[in-house]
Length: 221
Image (cartoon, rainbow, N blue to C red; front, top):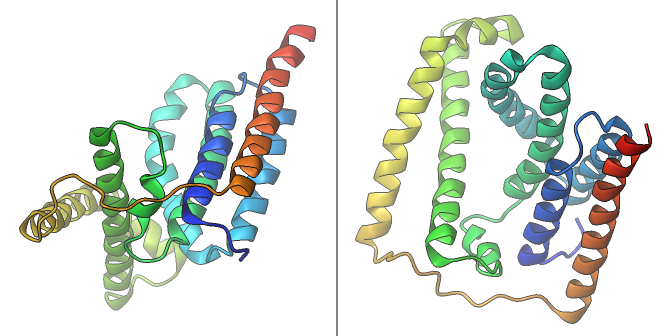
């Protein structure tokens, strides 16, 4: 993996996600470009593909329940766009060093309460991954081996159990953070170097051109 600082990794990931999220509906050629960028980003960060696949599968299970009632034509574009955004952000989160999300988060020009919520969301994602791994191991010990066994195990009841278990662990983690002196402040100073600012501006320009062009393509058609 290239020597990319944590703040720059986070901001580049956000640029890609925001650009893809603002695409005009059914602008498939531009969505394909963002898909290629997302795959390149995952390769650049050297993300562990099995972990990425497990996390995407869990997230898409929830997203499909929300998108499919909108109709297949609209839902297909929303799901593909969601996959692209999830690949980018999951690649960033899965390649973070332990307990370093706050370092990257401090560089964003956001209100402090929002930063605190994002930091806790990142902690919850780690807990969710841990619980998914434990449930898969438990399923294997009970003889539910292979993809078919896991699909039977991932029923509605087990999804609810996953939510409750991860929520309970998140509450325990937050209580432990408070006991160790956490008060919502991030006592870390991190910024971008001049070359990193230039790279970020170039990424913003490319994303803006792609997203704006998607609306022009729709108008021309």
